[in-house]
Length: 377
Image (cartoon, rainbow, N blue to C red):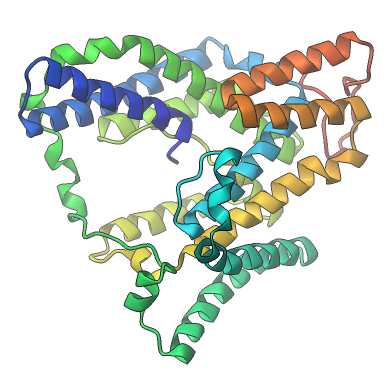
C-alpha cells in the first residue's frame, strides 16, 4: 500500500517540477499537470527498478544486522505515529509532532476524539482478552452500529453529523475511468524531469531502508527469518506496476500484517479480499467515506497505537536486558526528534556505544519460544 516515506519525496519533487515549469515560462496548467503526474509515475517505476537491483545484488541483507532493540524502538514510534494520526483525524486538525499537541486540548477536539479513544481501548482490550479472529471485525462493526443508532435516537441526519465534524466532508470526485485523463504525454515538459535525479537517489535510499524496517517488524512477529532481498524485490515489482499505470510509491503495511498474524490468519485469501474490497470501493458511484464517522478510523489507529506501544515500551521490559531496554527507549525518543532515517542511525549509534561500554545489549542467542530476538547477527 501507499508508503509515506516515498510520498514525502514525491511531494517535494512535485513542488519543484511546478516551480521549474513556471520558471521556463510554461503557463499552461495542462502541461504543468501532465509533467507532474507523469513525472511522479515515472520516478515510482524507477524506484521499483532500483529496489529490484538492490534485492538482486543482495544488498538488503545488511539490514538484517539491525539490532532488535532499535527495531523495537521503531515499532513503538510507529504506534505513537498511528495514535497521533488517529487523534488528528478525529479532531480534524493538522498535527505533525509533540509541539503541536496543544491543538488536541480544544473543547471541540476533545469531544470529537472521545468516542475514538474509547473505541480504540475497547477494541484493544477485547482483542487482547479474547483471542479469536472474529473479535476484531465484531468490535469494529459494533462501532458503526452504535454510531447510527445514536443518530437515529437523536434524530440527527448524516448531513448534520458531517457539519458537526463527526464525518469528514467529502467533495465530488470524477469517475474512476477518468483517472488517467491527465496523463497526456504530448504536453509533458521533458527537460524539467532530469533535475530531480538527486532527489530520486535519496528517495531510493530512504524507501529501501523503510521497507527493510517493515520487513524486520514482520520478521520479529513471525519469529522466523525472512529473505530481505526477496521481499524487497517484491516491493520493487509492485512499484514498477504502480508507476507504469499512473500510481505512486508503496510498500508493505506491516501493521495490518502483524494484526492478521495475531488473529490467526495465515491465508493469502485475506490479501485477495482486501484487493477486491478496495477495487469495489473505487468503482462505486458514490463516496463510501461520506457515511463512515472519523472515530471509526481513529479507533483503529488508536488500537494499533496501544498494541505497539504497550508491547514495545511496557511488556517488553520483562523480555530484554536493562541495557537493551534503554537502547529501545532512547531510539524511540530519538525518532521523535530526528525523524525515521536519522533516528534509526542515532539509535544504532546508541546501541554501539552501550555495547562498547560492556553492557549486555542482548546479543546472545535466544530460543524459539522467546518473544523478542536479541539481534539480527
